[in-house]
Length: 171
Image (tube, rainbow, N blue to C red; front, side, top):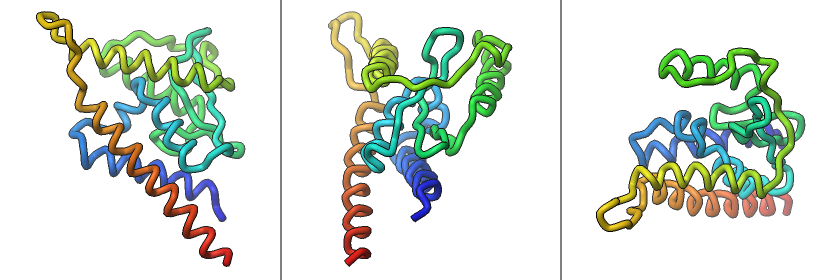
């Protein structure tokens, strides 16, 4: 079994599935705050082999990656601190967003499940404000909420199917 190939296949599956339900580019969505959800999806598929790690700018968690074996993964596939740093610099140039231009300001270190949830909740809160009707004080669900719910359900089915196929193969 090649776990690296399986992880890349799962990530590609998430990207393709996301594109079915949304016009947004999955790399932008999952690299801009929805990264904790990808960790959760990979955890669903690969269980305890998946460990949460975070990319930090100074002392602030800015991105969640999944460590499986000795490799780190995000929505782009296998990744490194240097690759994510290049992505940040492209965003900075394209959108005039502030990030430190010094790679020494960044590091990857293990995070807790609680930190992943907090990062995801902060992202959801940001998205919620875009869908908040001030006149009624009601948050309408964002289209992204339903997309992620659909992907979670599909990934659950995929994980069960893959597990069942592996068990059948072993028999």
